[in-house]
Image 1 (cartoon, one colour):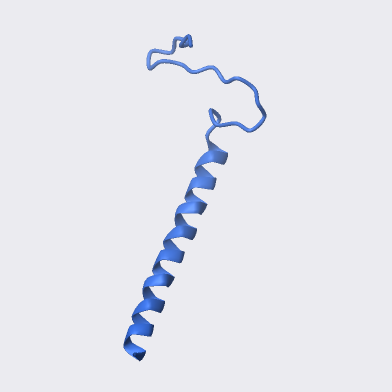
Image 2 (cartoon, rainbow, N blue to C red; image 1 turned 180 degrees about the horizontal axis):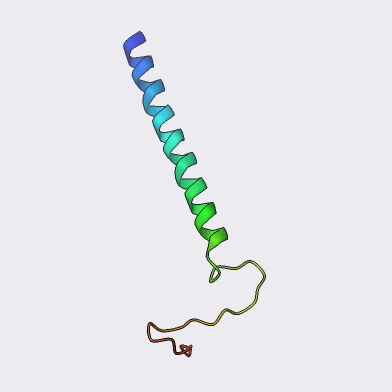
Length: 55
């Protein structure tokens, strides 16, 4: 019984840890990407040759 509880605690801890790591990485990625702004402004996207893309 104790072995099962320890295995459950380790597994739950790993899932929680990965959730925290992934959540922090996602928040950092969103805050550093200018195309995903929260201000509501429309951002201009450019193609690989530097020309603006039309929607």
